[in-house]
Image (cartoon, rainbow, N blue to C red; front, top):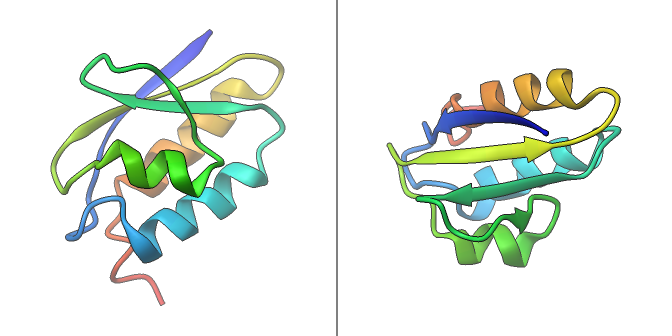
Length: 90
């Protein structure tokens, strides 16, 4: 299983607009992706409820994980997205 760590760059954390943009990106990936923080149970990264319940704030580190063909590339793209201030993206 491939994993990536990403630091949340959005000022409001992974809430509202940043969460929506992240979920859209996850849905485009060829593999299922999970997200967790602080060693918590991995959650479905394509679920708005999971993302909102994660409560990932600005500066916190999350772990993305996926398995299967295309997992490495998918996680690279998603980690880069989380490390971008999505509040500033037009």
